[in-house]
Image (cartoon, rainbow, N blue to C red; front, side, top):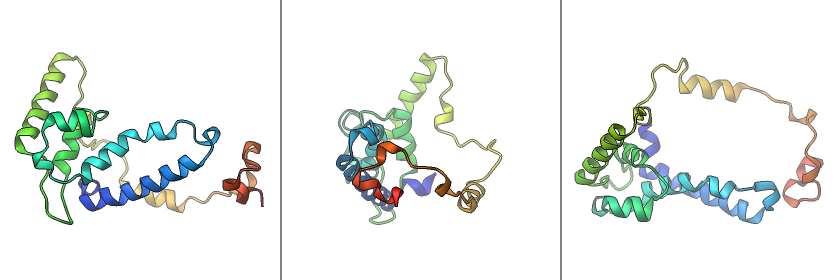
Length: 163
């Protein structure tokens, strides 16, 4: 969604992601597992949103240095939906966008898979985002009936569960 690809939203998510990563670094690997690895794609997408001077970046810089994990389809989607609501800067250059599109077309011709779903919204979903969020917000769960995992006992970050 376009509103998710704004500069200020990228800054907001980057701040929250930083707090989450700090918490993960301070937690035991028994509790967080490989969560940091799972955040790599979102970290790169957010970094791409907030990086300055996008029009001066080449496709090679973007795909090799800035966002090596993200696919060209993902980068194209972010680039075409990006808008800077704070400083009014532009997205990547037209040349970079054209090269991304060419690469996606070539890739779709060389493989038998249809990857257009990565670029299109699916209008067949039978509910709206508003319906989903309202229903989730209104859902009331009584977590007090669920006992916390014993492996969390003694961990400072989870003492509140045993009070």
